[in-house]
Length: 287
Image (cartoon, rainbow, N blue to C red; front, top):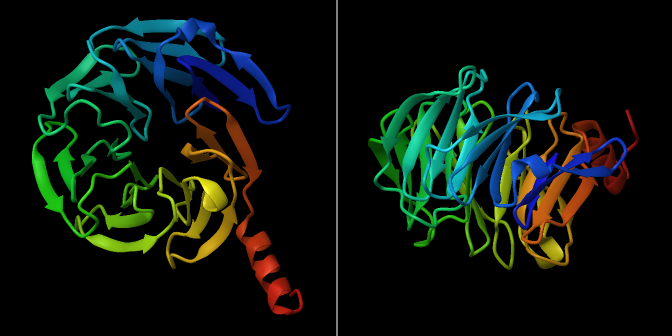
């Protein structure tokens, strides 16, 4: 697991809880992404530079400087063959993840500076979802062409937009505390529910897509949901605004991070553990 902290990246070993700073990635990092096989770690900086790190060889493999503005999105395609990068001016580049040469470049003109985490690319590399004011905009991730505009939430921009691993759904969060789920095939709003009292910041689907975690601040800093029934499973308190939240690849951990880079870790209960606790609360016998 990696956490950008004041521009630097630290690698946390979840088995030993030890921390190693990756100084080779620089001091201006704003975004990181792992390859699907976990072999590569890619970082994007405030100056637009992208660095490729080998997790197995423990060394820097490549520096890419085609972007001239801050990187706001890095995401590997699900097959690991390409990397998508987007900067604050809306310039998008698909990189060949073997040769590290630009495979396709375009400008998504609807995206402007300060977009932060309000945009994500689907794992199959087809779609961009962007949380515009009062709507979710769907663009081609190959050309930047606007495909559809969906409405149905507050007249504010999303604080976070994220695809599920299968690319079929999108979750978006809002400062009003709302968490919305969208159908990525029909571009329609599936549901929107009140998630957090003081605003929702981050969101992430579990690897199997069955659970959704959202983050905010205060007594409901982290919430775990059944993504199909929209049933709340767990609420965890926190002392600061948790802007980032994620599942570990094996779904056994929940991680959240604040602006200062402080990492919070929790055991993510399995469905068996959730069912057992619900039976206990109802006074039902174990099967």
